[in-house]
Image (tube, rainbow, N blue to C red; front, top):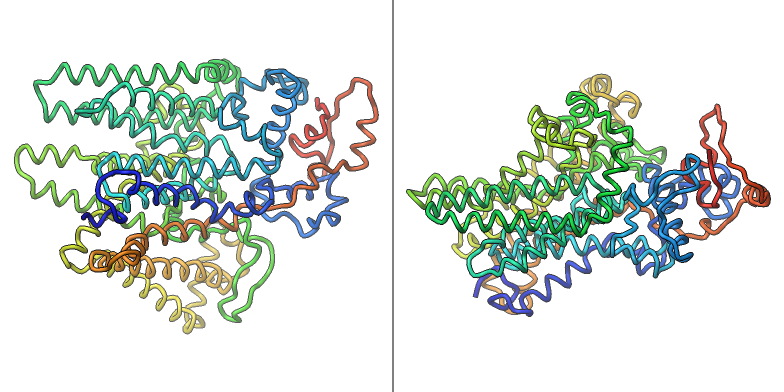
Length: 620
């Protein structure tokens, strides 16, 4: 019986049931308050910092300021959009035109309100403030289940596939994008698209079924309304399709007819997918052509918007550059919490700089690629080609390419000069396909660890995690003990590092802030090693204890990723959304035709952005 399974060989429903249920429930680790808890995921408290709500902030318990000031777009933009869509549909109209802003503007064509996206029905059947939590839960669960299916389709066991599912659905590039639901919506379908490409042309597999599945994924991404996610997904799809054709040609030289048939099927998949999404894509394309982004920035400008090199630290400590929802820091010298404004010294904000995928999945992914490289080195003849064109190598190379794009290397020119992609300004969003690559490779790495547990070999990865984690803990403690001697070094860092001088009073504060997050990363590393070691006991442990041992790694990764995002997302009461401030009641009492604008030389942003739309006021 394979150790990679939870207790049943093969691929029957019993093998799949437990991991799929776990993947459906896992997002509740960070979404429980805004689903079953009766709160809203909307940052309602952020409205209280602007007029006209600020005068009534104390009435709703929001006088302490916003929990997370970074994600105001979710209530200022998306909530206003969905409120308008809902009202239009209930009036029997398609929301083609927005009469409330800029003296009128296209609405449905812009796409990002996901008007025609089928799962957006949740915004119509649930109370609107409550719908956001369930909408996010649906898509994080979908992302996890589809990543699980992708890895199972690659032939790996259910334990490894479960790890891939929790690693992708909880990856910070995905969960921090909750402020933009259309991004989460599009990214959730990427695993199905890649699975369809892998299955088309596989011997014994009906291509029509997977052609339709891939077309559905493309169509759903287009209907979700975020063209950037759809574009990146299509690039990844094209790369995987080309890789599959190249691999088949290298191993089956004479089967030209089969390769042409596969290429035709993949082309038909894309065409059918665009057919499904055309009702949104074509109007959006027309709207984009009249957008300011038709004047594309230069390649060097776009590369300047990429992640800075120092952001590599955030792969292991997600809050190392600050978190807008953490209002203060632990003073490691007095062992007290120092309340205050959120510390922020990141060149990118928390959403744009969200790269944390869990330390353990990242290390497992690296281990998987290294092991495959060793197999290639040992392989001979035709077996070498099979090892070179393995999925591990593709996902490893794709991960490196995504990293190169996200960090703005010269290789970004490969993406910039593709048709239409020069208008995209966010190279850091290549972290979304990178997250899926790491999830898949981590599954391969876990599969290797399980195989090693059966041979009785000591887990080098477990030893590495425990060793490095322990060394980091000792190092931070020693720096604390000898800080008097090290203070000039940390004071110098505050002066030299970009934005550190504006975030930290001195080196002591810098050490306290960063030291806490390094300690947390060290503990995560050490516990990761212990979780891997539990795999060694799986084969020798009967029944439910065996299942617990196998679940140790996926459960730990799920908990780690949930911890990274839980504080960031708001969970508010929604009553203030129904509140009409007196000044708004006064304005709405005027039934004549008029539009408003605001003048504010002090920058306090009264009726900020779209917020007048929440009261059906039309601006100029």
